[in-house]
Length: 201
Ligand SMILES: CSCCC(=O)C(=O)O
Ligand SMILES: [Fe+2]
Image (cartoon, rainbow, N blue to C red; front, top):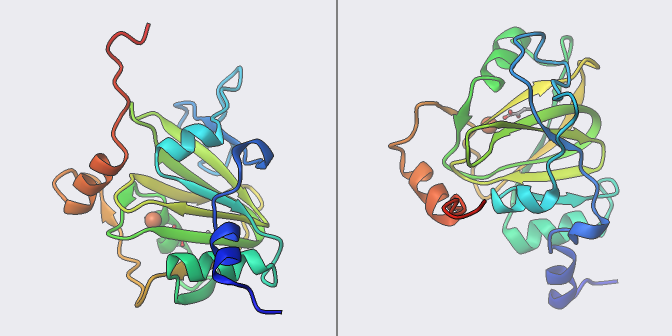
């Protein structure tokens, strides 16, 4: 059965906040192993609603055959896809790659990942610079917007397999912090401005 344009548009909407579950939390400052959860005690969760304000988009996708995947690709123009496996024995130059994934950086495009297997953490900076850790597992699809400061690490399972999507020819180049003068950073800040804190208390 063909999917109509209206159906594609509907399926590609970010999941309704009340039905989505994505575990995210503010990180502690400990310099212990980056693969540990680094939750605050007590835990300070971060809602999907908050992530949305930072420009992070999320869907739950039920495998590669889920029509939602194709609908999202069609609606957002994700023409390119490949699959990356990050684990000590599957990723060439593993140590170097892992190190560069965890350097705080931005990109001049969205970073789109659909987790096919395993798990890992995407960390993004909040408006006030605090690190938010996002626990991504099988079935989670997230988009980090152009210009957001972020990094990635495996968790203690040391394994993730993810589909990477892109509009057109992929550019994976990280622009390491400081990138405050980069045009993608400026675009990010105008698209997702920090909420006005004056008078908030
Ligand atoms: C989960 S994909 C592996 C990490 C990655 O591709 C990246 O940080 O750019
Ligand atoms: Fe990145």
